[in-house]
Amino acid sequence: MQTAEQIKTIVREKYSEIALQDKATNAASCCGVGSPGTYTIMSDNYDQLEGYNPDADLGLGCGLPTEFADIQTGDTVLDLGSGAGNDAFVARAETGPTGKVIGVDFTPTMIRRARENAEKLNFHNVEFRQGDIEDLPVSDHSVDVVVSNCVLNLVPDKPKVFGEIMRVLRPGGHFSISDIVLVGELPDALRNAAEMYAGCVSGAIQQDEYLNIIRQAGFENLKVKKQKPILIPDEILREYLTENELQAFVASKTGIISITAYAEKSGGDPGNKVIRAEKKKIEMRNLASEAGKACCAPGGGCC
Image 1 (cartoon, rainbow, N blue to C red):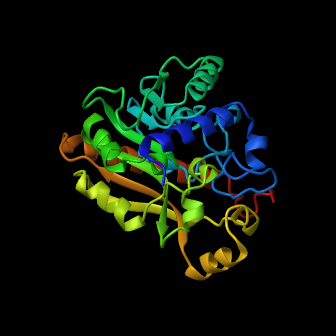
Image 2: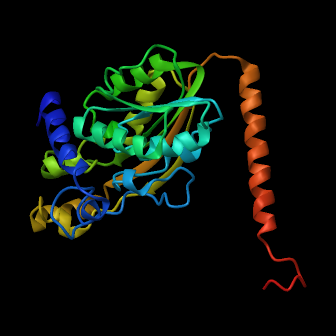
């Protein structure tokens, strides 16, 4: 079993390699690494989201955390494990030019790529900082919303990460995090595989344990907003397991699941929460109105 520092070294090396690849190359392998032609579908489709930039999408996520992040105009948003900037740019579209987005990643190559993307887009309110998300380079009580996409499962000390999230959030702030969790035990050969660490699987813990860590950090109103199964193709599993081990793994019905968890930090101005809720209702009504305009009225001759 690797030590915490060994795991970090594995992840840093693998993601430095991934940062130099394009999405097509990443999509030809298991979460950006491994043998070409063996791809496990983990990431969701960003194409329809405002702020989406293909140059920043390396296809490494396992959800859409901004979908449930309730980001408002003017918010300060922190993206943990920001990669090439994909979720940060989507968050920026929601917080607007009056807000601020901070991305933190511990891979220098990723930071350089994200900064290049931000410069191309002429985004002056999005910045990327190199640092460890177990020891965030962010001030206390300085952000409104934290998002993260398939990153925390790579981190050895998950309680410390959620403690850091609690520290940097303002009272009344919240997070929306997509991550990989387990129901059942992975075989040792998968749990210790370097590619599976970088592929977001080996570092995953039990779902109940993951949610309990969030509660123990002091967060409130914890909800699992979305979940979906992650299926690793047999051709990938055979790279690490014997045929007997593969059959035993399939029979064990171990679940590898992507979840998007939402929780809040206590405190803050109750009035602000009411305002945020009202803004959300207005946004939903506007979306419904726009959708209605797109419909063809009976006898309108547009169908």
